[in-house]
Length: 220
Image (cartoon, rainbow, N blue to C red; front, side, top):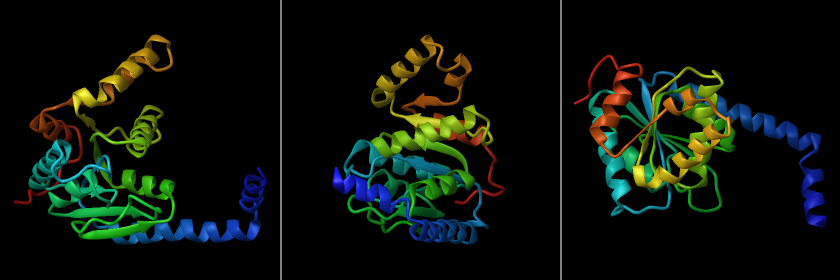
């Protein structure tokens, strides 16, 4: 308990807060400067823990390749797993890495690499430059990012962009939870139209392409 109290008091230290402000500004300044000329981009979210032989890794790689052929840049969290697959399949690949004690090591396929101090500055950057998002299977981080996107669209704090979940079997329990939220009048029926769920790569790519800003030129 004493350790918690010390941490609580440390977090209210004015001097430390000032340094946090500078680090926050630094995160945004680096991102805005580096990505200002980025073409329309799709962010691919998903687990850092899966390996190259995992079926979802292979699917993320294929989705990235097909979106890249249509001219989109691909943004990921810059780490291993799904993020690596997303960057690997891209012609213009962006990795928004975050400093963590484990799991998050930059993958070698990000051509544009940025490192963030804070999750929230990183999430702002994801969505500032994304004209669509794809939710591959993942853990708490993916669920957090998924909820953030849907909440911002639902509350009209950002423009509506296409959101696609890949993996019907994986996301089935979450969809049941959403339907229960609807049953209890905690969301509107229209909120369930903010995304699609599919196991068809071509369907997802076409959904993204037909419902987002389209690149001016295809990249072969």
